Amino acid sequence: MEEKAILDIRDLHVWFRVYEGVSRVLDGVSLYVRGGEHVGLVGETGCGKTVAMKTAMGILRSPPALFPQGQVLLAGRDVLKAAPIELLRMKGKTISMIFQDPLSALNPVFTVGQQIFDVIRFGHRWIRDDGALTKTKVRGIAMEALTSVQLPDPRRILSLYPLELSGGMRQRVLIAMALVNRPRFLIADEPGSALDVTIQAQILSLLKSLVKEAGIAVLLITHDLGVVRETVERVYIMYAGRVVEEGQTVEIFDDPKHPYTQGLLSSVPRLTGEALAEGIPGTLSDYTEAPSGCRFHPRCPQAMEKCAQQKPPMVKVSTKQHVACYLYHGGGG
Ligand SMILES: Nc1ncnc2c1ncn2[C@@H]1O[C@H](COP(=O)(O)OP(=O)(O)OP(=O)(O)O)[C@@H](O)[C@H]1O
Ligand code: SF4
Ligand SMILES: [Mg+2]
Image (tube, rainbow, N blue to C red):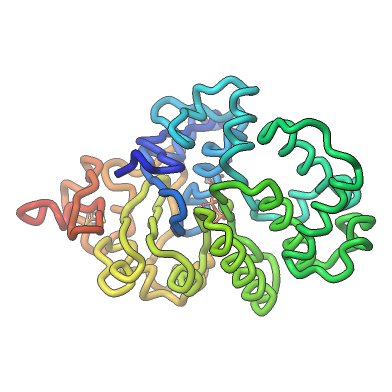
C-alpha cells in the first residue's frame, strides 16, 4: 500500500538537544500520503506537526535536531540519508511546503518579484534542466502564477515588498510560489491561520480548487476540525509526538476511537489551548520528561495500569481505521 506513497514516514524519532537534556519530541511517527491524496494532520499546539513536516522537507537543522531512528521516504528515497544536492533535486521534483507564518516565510528585503523569479529559476535549473529562461519568460510565468491565486494587478505586486502586502495577499503569494514549479505533493502548514476567519476560508477554498485541478497530493496541517471535515479524505490525529489514530475522515468523525480524539471532537472546533482544556483537562507534558507508556495517560479518563508501563502499538479497528490505545487490544488491554 505504502509503495505508491509519495511521502512515507516510518517510525520517525526526532529529538532535540536542549539545556535541560534531550527533548524526545517525535516518538515513532508513521504516516503516508499517496499520489493525489488529500490527508489531514491534526493535534494540539506543540504535538510535533511542524517538526514532522520540516523533517520530511529535510530542513530541520541538525544539531540541535537528532534523528535516532526512522525513515522519511519521499517518492521512495530517504530524505534523512540524502546528500544535500540530491535532496535539492528530490525536493524540487516532488514537494513544496506552505509555511505556518507567511511573513517569516518571505524575505522582507526582496520584492515579491525577486523571490518568485528565484523560485521559478530554481525549478527550471533543478527540476526540468531545460536551459536558461529569458527574463521575459520568467516574468510571464510569475504573472501567471499570481493571477492563478486571484491577485489583482500582478505586475504591480511583483514590484512590492512583503510588508507592503496585506496578510491575505502574502498568503496568496506563498501559495503561488509553492505551486509555480508544479510539485506532485504539497505540505500546507496551517495556511491562513494567522488571518481572520473569512479570509482564511477564502484561502483554503482557493487552495483546494488549485490542488484539485492540478491533481496534487496534499498534507494539510490544521487545528481546525471543521476544515479537516471539509477538505481531506483521510486524517492522522497526533498527540505528544505520536500518531494516536488514523482513518477515513468520515469514520473518525462518526466514531472516534482514541480517548484523545474523542476529547478533541467534544471540545469546541478550534483547538486553541483554552478550547481544548474544556474537552481534555491538563496540558501536553514536557518532552524532556515525556510520560512513560501511553503519553496520553496522565490526561486520559480511561487510563489503566498498563497504560503507564508500555507504549500501546497501533491496531486496526476497522478496514480503514487504526488506533494506538489499549482499550482496543484484544481483551480490553
Ligand atoms: N529547534 C528546536 N529545538 C528544541 N525544541 C524544538 C525545536 N523545534 C521544535 N521544538 C519543540 O518540538 C515540539 C513540537 O513543535 P512543533 O512546532 O512541531 O509543534 P506543532 O504541532 O507544529 O504546534 P503548532 O500547532 O503550535 O504549530 C515543541 O515542544 C517545540 O518546542
Ligand atoms: S492507552 Fe490507556 S491511557 Fe492511552 S489512551 Fe488508551 S486507555 Fe488512555
Ligand atoms: Mg506547527
